[in-house]
Amino acid sequence: MAKTKPAFLAMAVVALALAGCRQPTPVLTIESLPYQAEAGASAQQPTLSEYERAIIRAGSNRGWTFSRLETGHLEGRILVRGKHTAVVDVFFDDETFSILYKDSSNLEYNEAAATIHPNYNSWVRNLEQDIQAEVQRLRFS
Image (tube, rainbow, N blue to C red; front, side, top):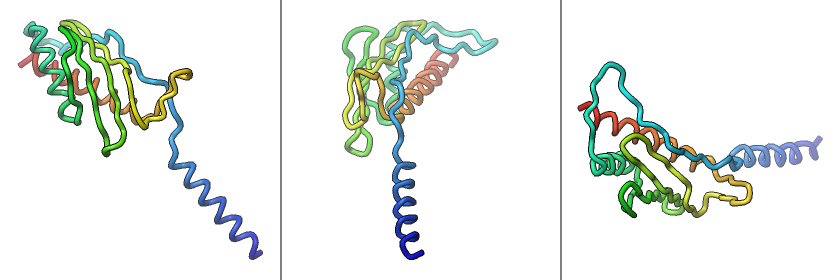
């Protein structure tokens, strides 16, 4: 019986360690997603520069920084806990936007399998939702 306790304890420790590990998931790609329309409201038609500023504002609330590469194209970067970095391309016009993986570090990216740590997908999904909300404010204020 004395041998059972250490073996059980070792198995429990391994199970807890594995439970803390998250398996890589497919890289989230958002392509040509239309901006949401608010029902019953008449929208203003912002300029491309205003969309750019809205996207930058949306991302900055969660720690994203952006560089303008050209009209309708931003590069977004987020650094989390000083060691996890994600870089995305954000393409946009007055009707749609896209968020595409560009680069990362310490996120278990596997190019052949097109997988990455699930936190990347959470950060991109939050960015997408924040862009939608900020564009709504811009169009309907």
